[in-house]
Image (tube, rainbow, N blue to C red):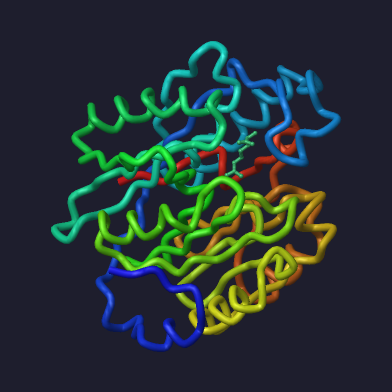
Length: 297
Ligand code: ARG
């Protein structure tokens, strides 16, 4: 399998010919027991050192759990570990998927920051205990941050891969081979939008929500090639409200940081249901709804 970086290459792919993928229906999250902003790994963390309101973070997180449960999703909780303050961002340590026989696997991340690499073994054990096959990237030069940068195309075994900050392009060559899936690689060329899930949110097989400034011209061409409906988020909604770090359930209900008025109106206009939640304490660390969980099989 191969990595696609431009429209010419993309035109050789016919989505209809690619294997179908069942969407995961369960959620894995990690309680923010040790959550803090201790250092600056992304621009959102600047000025927020030591500023997390602990109680508020617990209740915002619990509200997200309650929301998933109310929408009929089973939520599992992995134990938080002392000193691993970012372990709460459960999207980043592994990418779950289904192999050709539809057996579940995870590809473990090679995280960029040494402090975050320590989170991965805990997720590895969690998945191993549940009989997931585990893939790893042996070469330590290959960087990859799970569902932060690797986002499955709706209903298909094709991966969208953000690179430039936490994941490198080289990693996708290896990942495409290991997982036997094509990867559409998107360069993230701004300082602010450091994970693909900060600027790209798939909503249904035809629809994606994006912040276009985060992408290069070839990236935008690729996005428009594969999605009929591209909903654009304003700069304020993307940066202040983390609107693209939303998550859709059943291609229907979008759970999103509250206050992204223009994005919410666009989503309602396209027929989606919207649930607005406050994840403000986590935005201080550069994350919101999408990255506080990982969808699992
Ligand atoms: N503080 C964390 C970091 O910089 C936030 C990660 C948020 N995750 C995400 N997928 N956007 O690594």
